[in-house]
Image (cartoon, rainbow, N blue to C red):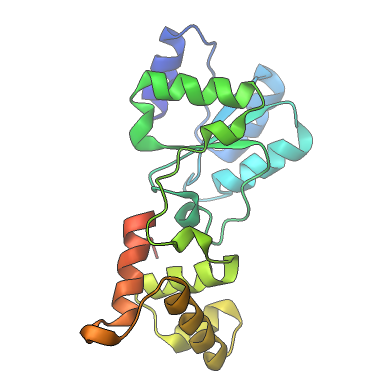
Amino acid sequence: MSALLASSLKNAGFEVASASNAADARKAVETFDPDIMLIDIFLGSGPSGIQLANAVSQTHPEVGLLLLTKFKDSLSSMHDLGEIPPNCGFLRKDLVADTDHLIAAIEAVLGDRADEARQEMAVHGGVGDLNKKQQQVLRLLAEGLTNSEIANRTDLSVKSVERYLAQIFDELGISAENGVNQRVEAARRYYLTAGIPER
């Protein structure tokens, strides 16, 4: 992916430096002085791309930031990794092969129009309208976890998890009528919006 991006950007007239991890990227910010950084959200062991983006945003607010992910939306990408920094673009990896999409996203971020470079998949079934805690509970449900384990991972009681799930089912309009399994249907809605979450 890094080689593909570097080649595409060089062909488009950009000067490019590549880094394979967060530490090297932090050094490159100092030595290369970039206008924009394209950062994969998952960088293997060590800090995540979101942590790197937040660090760069604090120390070098003049550097544009464009996050890359295989997931279809930021709901899945951001789970347990922190908030995406303000004025940060978000581009799905399946779009970077199209140089026009890539350049348009870069130009939007460089032009202080990062909101135009938020190329998430359109929300299906209202999942994106859930609040942050509801989204977290739904994601853990989509991982196949029990209420007890969801409670464990969210510092909630099992009763609170049950209340959150009832709110989620209500918000998404998922009824147990007609033999629908509410947990399965909620997970299906999540997959349609964000893809299957990694454990």
